[in-house]
Amino acid sequence: MLWPLTLGGIALGAVVAGVSGAILGGILGHALDRHWQLRRWSDLLQRLGLRPDFEQVLFLCLGRIAKADGQVTQQHLQLARELMQQYRLDESQRLAAMRAFNQGKQQARRVERAVERLFRQQPARSAELLDGGWRMALVHGRVGRAGLLLDDWAQRAGLGKAEQQRLRQRHQRRQTGAAAPARTTGSLQQAARLLGVELDSSPEQIKRAYRRQLSRHHPDKLIGTGASEAKLAEASERVHQIQQAYERLRRYHGIR
Image 1 (cartoon, rainbow, N blue to C red):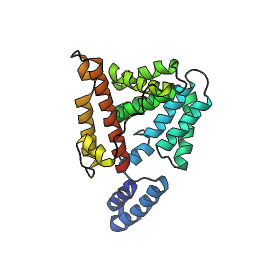
Image 2: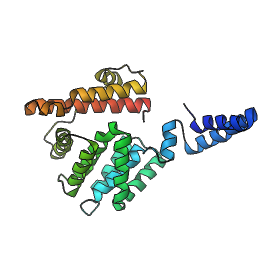
Image 3: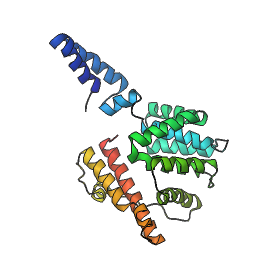
Image 4: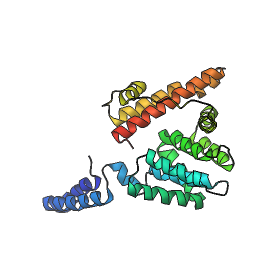
């Protein structure tokens, strides 16, 4: 575990007042780390607003999507609660997510800025954000203005049309019951094997493997080759499995 303000306080205190300054700076920095629950440098960046917190941006977007056609329903709210459980948010994080959801309903410009920043700073999570968005947009089984909003975000994220269509169709099938439940990657070991890493690999190794596998299997690569619909569907399913595997390992390792 890394305490960023503790280390910063020690370094600054040492420069200003030597050993005694380092001790005092470390104590003050550690108190701030504990108060703000800062355990790594990325936590500090999020606290300063320099790196967006994914869950906060997600629930901002979900509020925007739910409100896109004018009325937020109980089904929208229930799905938001289910996603809070899925992301294992604690009580304080749930409250923050609810605030973000309500802000997203009212502050369209803030949502757009947050989305733009997330796509720029955390591009690997763009598809995950849009997947949650399509799930919210199709909560009633039909697509209205929210679909246009999601298509625009997907273009800004650099997702190809095949990937956009896959995200939409997956949740349409879920609503109509036309498809069996999506396959999972199984255990953590299976997820690691799918990405081509070991379970104890470093976060950076896992991120590199994830990006490499996405690039290798992305259906957009097949479009120009005249691949059949079956091949495109197979590639899309493979990408979905890779995303699930990465999400499983990301949670296991606490990767931001």
